[in-house]
Length: 193
Image 1 (cartoon, helix red, strand yellow):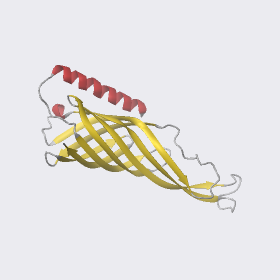
Image 2 (cartoon, helix red, strand yellow):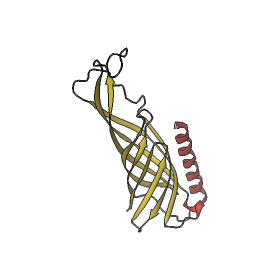
Image 3 (cartoon, helix red, strand yellow):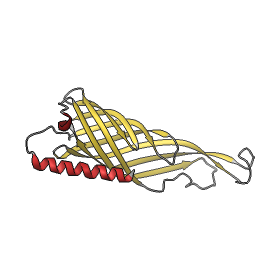
Image 4 (tube, one colour):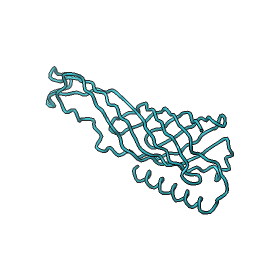
């Protein structure tokens, strides 16, 4: 998955620079856009999908290519059993504790827009993107838990994600977007300034 995100971002950069070198005519600008989204993310070590919120601000770099610093947040609660591994779960020596993990991914998303290729017009935007960043995590455990408090920590703080998406412009200043990705798929509002 990490290789896919790196390849996607590299190809997007290559197409963006090639397009910029070949055609200097005016084209649609995608930057100066605030994107607010909510969605569902799947993180392998959790074992299920969790709700997530995202925020990014796009700015134009070259023709058809934007960069967007982003921040996201997800939080979930789960239970952990702690006790003697030689006895069954229902034995009194086992205890169930709850924990809550909150994670905040931070990074940059690079997007290449394919509107010209698809002859999309001004009502629609279509893109492929890659995100690169890191994750800040906080895990809190129920009082009285004395087991391994790192049982559900991710082994890597690196955040990589590959995206494909579309935006439908409702007005000149607002739009609805759908971003499908390898980690977090979101639906939200775009505000163009």
